[in-house]
Length: 135
Picture 1 (cartoon, rainbow, N blue to C red):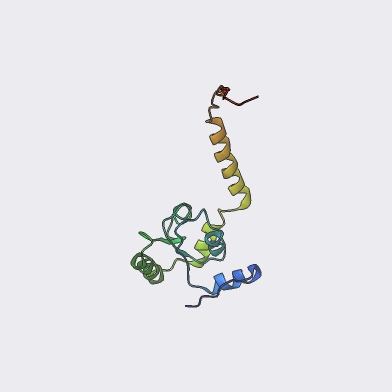
Picture 2: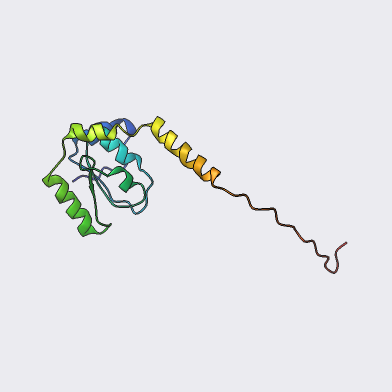
């Protein structure tokens, strides 16, 4: 296992393509680009069950969602995935469902629903009180 530190964006596809899996062990995350980039390269995931990860790792072709963030759960997830790696083509095909147009559409729908459900509060009256020494 190698820890590379910062990697320039243009090198990522080759690294994802050479890897057996991508492990995302975050404690909080939206739908992380690393998840989608890995899937786009056909590389399955081991991800902790935080925020956006369960929405991505939903089928065996995507990889394995760990039980929690413990060392043991992550190790078990890696071992389980390595014992039964999905077909890289199937992983890539699954990853193709995520694109900027669809992501934008989903965000717009979510914001529209939030706005539609918003009930503005009536403005509160502000009371002005005179205090001693005011001019």
